[in-house]
Amino acid sequence: MSIGSLLQRLDFLGRRIEDVFLATLLTLMILLAGWQIVQRNFVGGGMIWADELLRLMVLWLGLLGAMAASRDNRHVAIDLLLRFLPKKVKPSVQIMLHLFTAIVCGMLAFYSFKFVKMEHEYLTEVLTGLPAWWFELIMPIGFGMMSLRYLGHLRRTIYPLPEEVA
Amino acid sequence: MSALLAIVALFGAPLFAIIAAGAMWGFHSSGIDLTVMAIELYRLAEMPVLLAIPLFTFSGYLLGESGAPGRLMRLSRAFLGWFPGGLGVVALIACAFFTAFTGASGITIIALGAILYPALEQAGYEKNFNLGLITTSGSLGLLFAPSLPLILYGIVAQQAGGDIDVKLDELFLAGALPGILMLVLLGGYVVYKRRGKQLGGKITFAEVKSSLRESIWELPLPFVVLGGIYSGYFAVSEAAAVTACYVLLVEVFILREISLRKLPVIMRSSMVLVGGILLILGVSLASTSYMIDAEIPAKLFNYVQTHVEGRLTFLLLLNIFLLLLGAILDIFSALVLVVPLILPVALSYGIDPLHLGIIFLANMQIGYITPPVGLNLFIASYRFDEPVLTLYKSTWPFFLLLLASVLIITYVPYLSLWFR
Image (cartoon, rainbow over the protein chains, first blue to last red):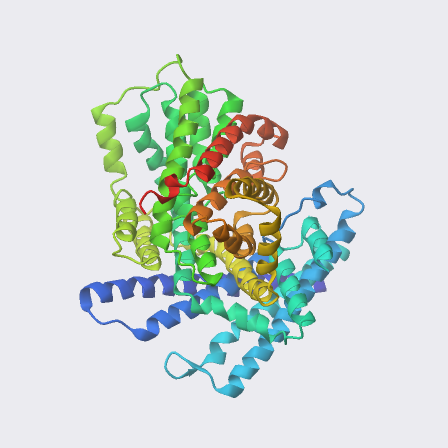
C-alpha cells in the first residue's frame, strides 16, 4: 500500500469517527435537554447534574465541530487579499497561512494540556464526583487534531500526492 | 504585532487563529502564563445559554433540508399572493421568518432561493430585480427572535462585564419593530416597482385551506417558541430544546421527509458551523479578558470621549464604522470582537445596550450585501451561477433602502425601546 492511500484511509477513518461522535453527542444533547423540560414541567424535580452535563456537552460539541471544520479548512476567514493575488504567489501565501494556523492550534493544545494536568493535580471535580479532567481532555485533543489537520493542508499544498490531484 | 496579525487575517488565515494569536501575544507580553487561554476557553462550558446555539442551528438546518421552506412559501402565497408585487412581499416575509430560525448563515438563500427564484421569474419579475430581492432577503430577519446573532449579542454584552444587564427576552422585543421597518420599506419598494403589473393570483378558500393543512405540523412552532420566550415560560435554551425535539420528531418521524441515514450528515454540517462560532467565541473570551486587563476599552473610551462630541456625532461615526466592519468581517466574529470594546463607550453617550445591539446587527445585516466581500453576494453568485458583478448591480437599490432603515433605527431609539 502506498503512503498516499494509507494517508487517505487514515483521513477517511478520522472523518468517520468524528461524524459518529458528533451525531451521537448532538442526539444525546437533544434528548437530555428535551427530557429535562418534560421532567421540570410534568414530572417534578430536576436533575442537578443534567444542567452541568449539558454545558460540558456544549464544550465537546464546539471542539468536535471545530475539528470537523478544520478538516476541510472551513473556518471563518476574510480572504480579501488572497482573491487578488497572482496565481503564482498564492500557494506560498497559503503555505504560510496553514503553518501559522497549525502553530497557533499546537500552542492551544499544549497549554490546554497543561491546564488539564493542573486540574488533574488539584483533583477538580464535576458532576458530583467525577474528575473534571476527563471532560477537559477534549481541549488538548481537539486542538491537537486541528493542528495536525492544518499540517496536513500544508503538506497537500507543498507536495500533493498523486491520489489527491483530481 | 497587531498590524502583522491584521495582514495575516486579510490574507485569509482562520479568524479564530488570529484572535487566539493576538490574545496569546497580549498575555505573554504582560507576563501571564498562557494556560489562561485554556481557562478562558473552558468558560464555554460555564454559560447555560450557549446550549441554544447548537440546538437552534440544528433545527434550522433540519428545517432547511425538509419540505418546510416550500410549505412556508405556499402558505404565505395563499394569503399574500393577490396584489401586484405580492409574490415579492411573500419572498421577503418567508425569508425573514426562515432566517430568524436559521440564523443568517446563508442557508436562507440556498433553501428558499431555489423555490423563490423560479417562482418570481415565472411571475414575470425582471431578472436583476429578482436576484437583488433574493440576495437581500437572505439576511433579512436577523432582528427577529430567536435569531442566533441576537442571542450572541446578549451573551457577549453580558460577558463584557460591568453592571450591564441585557436580558435576552428584552432583546427579542427590541428587534421586532426595527425588523418590521425593514420589511415594510423593502416591501413598499417591491410593490412600487410592480405597480400596474398583472396581479399575482387570487385568494381562494380552497388554496388557503389546503396550504394550511399542509403546514399543520410546522404552524405551532413559532407560537410555541416565541410565545414561550416572550411570556417568560421558557428560557431561551429551553425554547431551543423544545424546537430541536419538535422539529426532529415532525420532519424525521411524522412527515418522514428526512431519512435516518441523512440525519447524521445534517447534524455534521450544522455542527461545523456551531464549532466555528463557539471556537471564535471561546478565543474572543480570552482576547476580551486580555483587553480588559490592559484597559484597552478604557483607553478607547477616553480617546473617543475627547474627540467625539455629542451623541449624534457618535452615532454617525458608529454607523460608518459598523458598515465598514460589516463589509469585511462576518457577523459572528464582529459581534464577539467589537461589542466588548464599543459597549462601554456607547453607554457613556447614553445609548441603551439594547438599542446598541439592534444598531449593531442592523448594520451587520447590510454587511452581508456590501461589496466587495459581502457573504450573501457570493452565496447568491454561486447558487444562481451569476457573476458577482451582476449581483453588485442588482442589489444596490435594496442596499440603499436598508441603509435608510438603519439610519432610522439608529436615530429613533423609540423603535427599539418602545416597551420600556
